[in-house]
Length: 422
Ligand SMILES: [Zn+2]
Image (cartoon, rainbow, N blue to C red):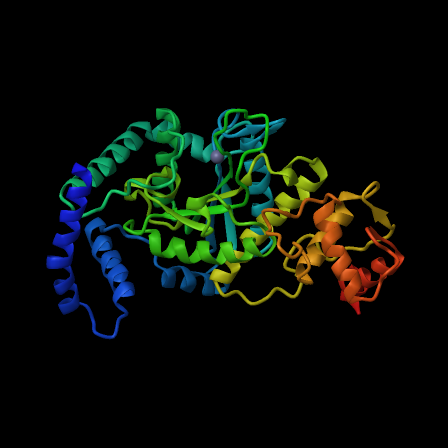
């Protein structure tokens, strides 16, 4: 009751004092709601005064890479520590999946001469430069963290910054783990990193952790809008989200379901306003999702998640299409050779089939979402439903519930590698 009263009084005060002020002070052409947000953003950026990297600076740098040989510096940080931490499900360890995606991502970036990539760790140890930085600068990292935290608390207490209290709850990191994350932020600031990407897989708390949880899909966390690195990060994250969501489900967890979620408390993306560079944290899916269980499917799926991320960053830079890349997914092109059905199928054939059916607009089937029917490499009801609509379109009526020679011919006509050479 008491709380409600307080909120009501605050709201009335805002309406009485705040709105007339905004109406008088905001440019007339701006949409009022948009204007409110823009105003809030600019005002907070002034409060924090960090030398954050702007969208224009970053895009100009990309455009000048050819001449200056000064590449876009990307930091890829596989979430958690070498050897411990992170979600686990069945025999899967998140910290290892994170490293696998990071390696693929590094490959895609470094094949392109616009980028250079640093990965913070592998499965066994930190990158030697990062490790040396932790060792040599531990006290500085502690004071950097303390100072930024105190500044933030001061700004919250004086009312200059609004503390977000209804964000997604995250597991708190142990003190030394948290300090290493702040240390990475400090290192990012001092080593002219242009974009930081933190790689994770999600988990959802549940009583029996040996069964699958309630939610599925990916989500990208970006700095809350009051932080200095929020604007640039959000634009990059939106581009990556658009790519990822073509073939992958967006998280259906209520607070994550816009695909890109603001967060004030995640260290990796700059809590306490600790980062100059844009930094996003990608949860590529929930670790218990079916498509990560099989080793063969998983390898391809992780590779494609990395590829979509790379393409999203390329979109941010408005990079021209690379003629060597014929498809926007690593699942295609594909050459189907043998017929298959629910009892006997090759996961690679099915991954590419599901992807082709997605491109054709048949997968997931009517009334189904990508969360109901993710691309899994498993030939099951989702694939059969989509396949039957595909076969209907091409007048194939004697290969029900299976991919026979006629279906293979149609698939290979459009999606096989040989076509690219014609
Ligand atoms: Zn994680």
